[in-house]
Length: 171
Image (cartoon, rainbow, N blue to C red; front, side, top):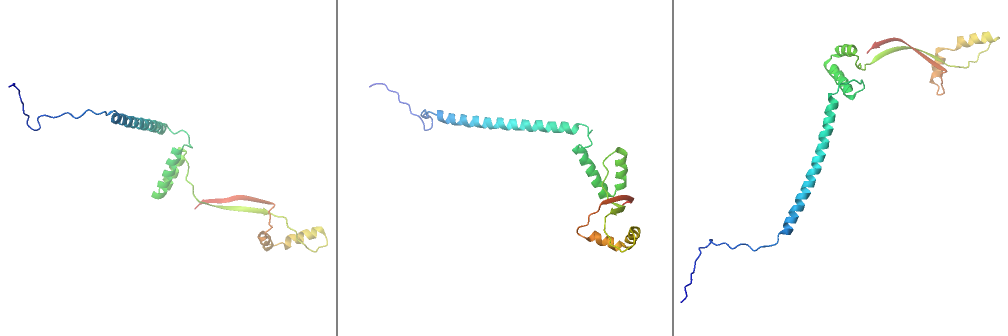
């Protein structure tokens, strides 16, 4: 009889390796996905870099002194100051401050009394013996009511209008 050695293994002591399979297609898919994720991340990083640069320029602009009276920042400050003055009843203090520093004054309502002179050519028919008498009669007979009536006519055209401010007061 020949001498043979027989060894017994307990269950779970011996593991048989899994068969070797070709996983190159799985790795290729993962690599492609990783490259796509990297490209998206790089695009987002470039976008964020542009945003940061734009915000830095805005901050630099905000830190520059305001030298132009038409600067939107200054306009916004004056508008906000006017709003606060109106809301808190600080109008006279605001007006003094604006005048002292050469700012933009508030708009207010004013009542202006005007003296208005209208010049209009009209024809008046009168019966007279001489042209001088006709002129005198025309002037005497042409009344304020005639003026008002001629102003109401649709075809009224003034030859000239002169206006002069007589009095101005704040409302």
